[in-house]
Image (cartoon, rainbow, N blue to C red):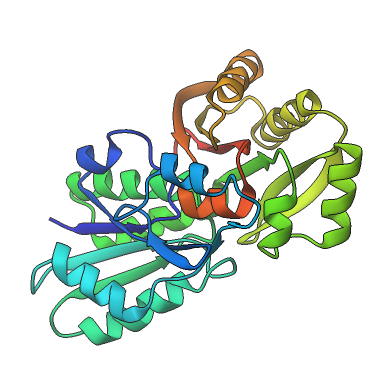
Length: 281
């Protein structure tokens, strides 16, 4: 069986890891003077508790090739064929670190590395599709071709409750963050060419949710879609988005997932959004 690894930037719906036989590469999270690894020594509840203090702003980094090799050797056996699906190389050096690890593993484990040019639940959808295709008898080459289609067709739209986290992580400038805070403006963030870009700002939370849904509608129209509604400790708002999309989109599947810790560290509590892809690839 093909081993499928996704890095910890993936927003994974409950039960998918077990159902689709996936392994999650832990990502390092720096909080205060300590480095945690999600999935090993920090949970979402502990993460949100720790970052309540202003002095404990979280930062993220890519795992080292040494840690990646160690992880892969623990979850794989010599001779295994492995597919690693990773967060966009334009947002993290993780995919580069995994490629370096692949060179170290060469001859023992055959590791293919795929740059999703995305993050969040995109990785979950890709990993599920890869497993289903593998179970249907597709070759690894064919599976990667399908992942490229997802990469080209997927749309990710988010809105954050505050730009404080994106500013401190270097995702936006100080002026935009300050204006957002002073005027209580809500930014709309869209995945574009492997990078999350702030495309517009609106005046209220309600309006920002409407814009998130309308952007998905504008892109897919009446074509059937599969959706992941993602959120950072805001299940109530996620349910509101579900009501909105069911009214105006042709939805064949909706899954819910919490933002992974490494994503929430850069966008902050209260972030909500939609990951959408065509129902048929």
